[in-house]
Length: 479
Image (cartoon, rainbow, N blue to C red; front, side, top):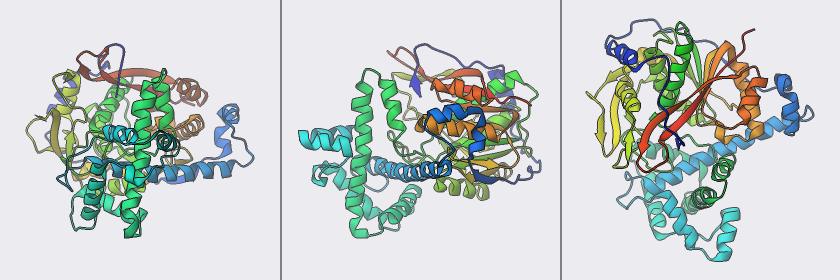
């Protein structure tokens, strides 16, 4: 989410009253038979797929000669970034979790600042260039929490996040004697990014561009939050307003993510969860864009751990612990539209276990038990959206939020070619990437932007604008 220069409200042809009336009817369990699962395959992007944009990709350094080898290198680099992103989450968990130790939690940005300020000038210069620094320079509270985490990883504790990171640590640092040093080196690497983002890029003359450039080389994060579902709901409202009778039967979510350990404000109310698939299904049914038993949602992620999680959820429908990532304080107030969205959230996919949203410590909270027939609508596939595409029946809708900022211009170009190739004629594409190049790129691919909206999550006292995110809706040309 990011502050905007002016206030916008949710504007779609589907009113809040209609939405809430529909939710009031959701108490009856849906008894429809599930849609037959469509056969989906996977293939690497080919040079011929790029025919509408060959001049563009040639300008970015990609030519037929060595094309397959170049794509292979990009894929291998993305897999490295997946591993690095998982280790970033491990570091943020190490610093913030209250489940494995009673030691005070450490805010990552403050930890990065303390680390850098503790370095001499030469050491600081080396660290900012390479992320290398003497392990002895790491603040003592961080080293104490590292020791506590290793102890917890060696225990039989069953906390879901600890179990996840236990598997990651054992795979990454197979020699137990090297785990503490390995974790501390990962801390240094993660803190270099945090410091550059918060204390270098944010303070530069062109802060947005500097921050964006950092994200195009960092690890691929699995971060997700309930607020991302609200943005998609707003975008789906646009589709409903343009085509009230439209039915979406096959939907692809690229990078649904998994709520493990964000960079700030780690909440451990419930186990790790991938919220977006359930929020998308809920919104499709609430808005009348899909019918129970007649919709299939595919969650496709490059991280195999996310895919495994989604497949397990299909077999064992979860009880969702839904918590707003944003905290309401004396200076931050949720918008009325977002409050209404959160209050209705989940009524079409499951049974609420709390009577109404609970505002505790400034966070909206509720629990929803997903019904088995809804869980059967969810499929999961492994996909590198830059170098691969799913083949099989095309999709009526593709959603990609909060993943495109991780791609440089060439990767973005390849990913958009794949999106266009997976969409059915007349299909819609929703995203929140504000890069100016998106408009020309998608138009060249026959996927022009058709509408955009801003979703206001909260207002901030003293800020020039509210906390908002923008959603763009593209439509693939009909043949």
